[in-house]
Amino acid sequence: NSRLPNDIAVKDAKIVPEDFHAQFSAKSKIYIYRIYNAPFPSPLLRNYTYFFPLALNISAILKALPFFIGTHDFAAFMASGSDVKSTVRKIERLEIHKRQNMDLLEFKIQANGFLYNMVRIIVGTLVEVGLGKIEPEEIKSIIKSKRRENAGRTLPPQGLCLREVIY
Image 1 (cartoon, one colour):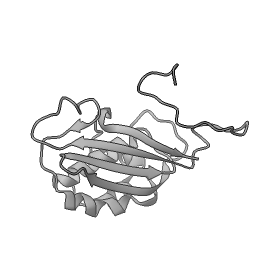
Image 2: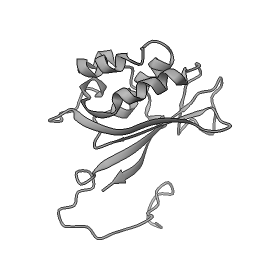
Image 3: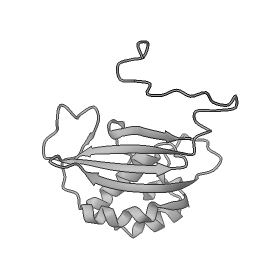
C-alpha cells in the first residue's frame, strides 16, 4: 500500500490461475451511483456525488426498478463509441437507498457486465421517472426499442463508483 496513491488500498491478495483476467474473469460487478438531492450543493460531497436540486418521486422510481431486472438487450442504455459484440446483459439487482439524516440517494446496481455509460444512463432515466417525465412502465418499451434517444440523459461521472467485482 505504501506505493499506491492515498485513495487506493489493497485489502487482500490471492494467487490466481495463469488465464485469469481482471475484467473478463468477473462473474458480476456492483456499481453505486450517488445523487445529492438537496436544495443547495455540498462542498464536501461535490467530487463524489451528482448534485440534483429538484424533488424526485422516490415511489415512482421504486416502481420502475423491477423492469430493469433480468436479461435484456440494453442497447438503449449504451453511449455511442462502443464496439461490443453483444448489448445483452443481465441485471441481477437494482436498488435505491436514501441515507438517513442526509439528502443522499444511492443507486446500487449489480450485473454480469456493463455497457459504456450504462449505469449513468440507467440512473439518468430513473431521475426522469422521478421527475414524472417518464412513467415507470415505459421502461419496458425503452428497453425493447434499443434506441439510445428513448432513454434518459447520461449523468455526470462524479456520482459513479465501482463498489465490488465478484469472481
